[in-house]
Length: 525
Image (tube, rainbow, N blue to C red; front, side, top):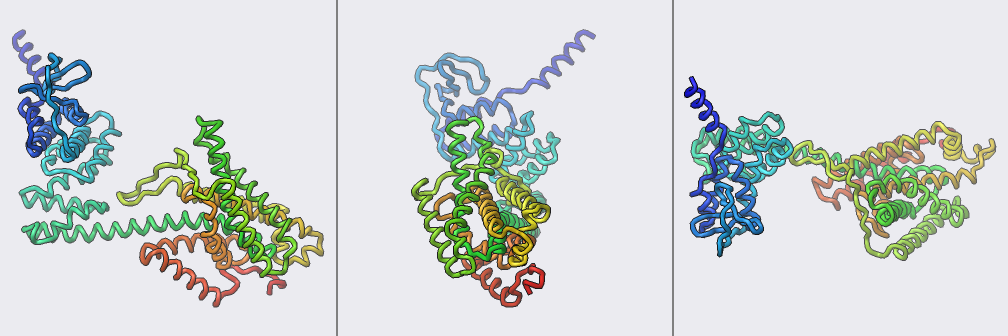
């Protein structure tokens, strides 16, 4: 009985203990021929031995040395046998092992493959994602073993794709056919590039595999186009959000006072520079809280742009009501003054406004569809500002006065509405909203003195298309123009898209001059 117990114990120990990497393969890592080194790396990788990671890491860091007929790892003043990991005497004159770019690439892939067996699922996920772009046929057994051990569904699906890629070079046509069919469910452009050579007679002799590859390429192309269009729609929504913030203020001022404010784009610039100023302040005095400079810049951007708007209205625009051409020329001159002031204060070059860490990264819906957090937050911010403006315009006394002056200024004045004060407050409100638009724009675009020039025409198009003084019209027009423009850019380029949009708006205004949503009332009629 005692002998039986001892035997079982020895068998259990032998089963749980893992053998050291093959010394002969480790010695091949020091061979002068790169092909021999690559073959040794691939063979060592298939063993899935944890000690192999230590050897590969030492080789990548140039601490793997050849000492006579042995390979050692030099760590400071100590030396270790590469195969066994045991401490050995420091060799007198160890030789460096040459590691070129080809070998470094193989080592990176091998270490990523061995990390598939890490206990941490985050490490395994990162490893599986790395292997999506490059995997060799020799790694197929290792990937199959990793799939058997994997319990996480997301990681297992990635491993299945990597395993299928590895089997594309399999000598068995049945294995190649299974690999092609498995890859047909992918949405990755890289997978499509791997399958395209198989569709040609010169590279694939088996017709079943070739026809399956042709079908798979078509399926992937369809999904890639769909995800590309979804990405353009999202980019259009983020662009529309910026246009909405710029056009909201313009819709209010144009609707109340009938002013064509050519300096409205520079109010966007004021808001963007407010974000830059707050970022500089936090970097100097509150470096530990730099991620929160953006929320702190929101009131600064609003009130700074509103103050500039009040100064413009009180000093210049107030004296030009009812004189449209003179107002257009005067506000164009004001825009030049504001641009030059920005050059004097901040310099002629663009300034850096960095995204906070909580706005970095994004949500990956598909392999080629990433929704950046900064654009997601901008869309949400635009909707939040829109809701506040709606409440202000429909539920407050100021909003009622603004709507009254917009619809019938003489009658509003007759019933006691202070039209002159409403003009100033409306202009300040519109300018402040434009400042918030500039704050949002600073997170996705360059911040410079001329940044507002590219948005003033688009903002006016939104106002005219949506209907003067109509918030609902501004919303639909801004989001519609943003999405329509981005879809056209993907199809015909930015220049053609801009021309088509302008032609569309001209034709639309010819048919419906009042815009999507017209003002109502006997005075308007």
